[in-house]
Image (cartoon, rainbow, N blue to C red):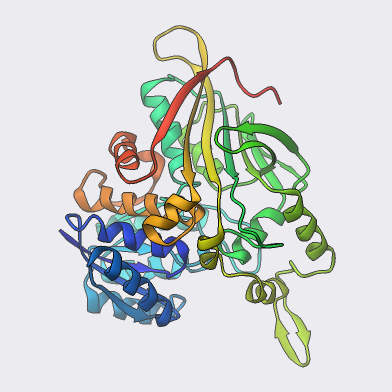
Length: 403
């Protein structure tokens, strides 16, 4: 039985809090804070109506370390679950250090003025967290998160080594909008427009954004164009699977999304540097975020499925030579909405955030310092995925991807 503070009241925060309330044997008290208290109150009302569990709500500017420190001190949680913006990771980690409380997030830090996300800023907290005797768990979403646990499960149960790894993220959902993003527009567009990077022969290789496109037939969705991108789990997987020769991340995008994004990029609306308009400085991408549909509003209209998984090739544990396995989850947007009031992109991140928190609170995963999700036993996490709405399957393929 543990008290937890969740910071962030978007779709992911909503899913995580709903699922925590559904696991009251682990999460005895749930506290939710964000910049806009009304968003927290709406989530609390939904949780109460669906589960009967009360959620306490607060307004907090997570950039303000002293204010966050004071809130943590007031609530006295065992764990702070950071589901706010990646820009705020370090400030929330500082507040956890100030109060001696464990920390969890789903995405690594990136500075506001540069679309480049790396773990080095958070890994630099290792000594301070260890000396304080507290734990930070980084990247407990789906990707990063489940995709890394998938790889480590394969290393434990199927493959002695992983030589080749491809992570495939397909959202086959249709929300009926001309252009919208399924999670925070600012973060989504920064990721998509940044140069692609993949791991090959001991180093990262950079290529222009969206320049490598392949077609893949996704179970439950069908054939989709997917594009090679950089995603932060490649950095941690390259560290914790040192024998990996090549690691790539792929994400699907529809033609309409690409068309709209190209136009927006060409006219400067995806810029992250400030411009002056009528004497006021604005960041074009932040303005664009303000006029795009709120991702949390897409739940009622989104239909279809997501399909996210790993294809890994390496030396088989049973000594039978090199083998390739495909491990994945398929999640239905309408099922996710029926359970939590959120579409599947939020669901597939919010559920693993809850599970990672459960791993820490129950002692299944413990330590002092800063840890990535790959560093712990994958089995209890994988068991909870099956129990909590994200069942997975694994199959043997004839060989690795032929591109």
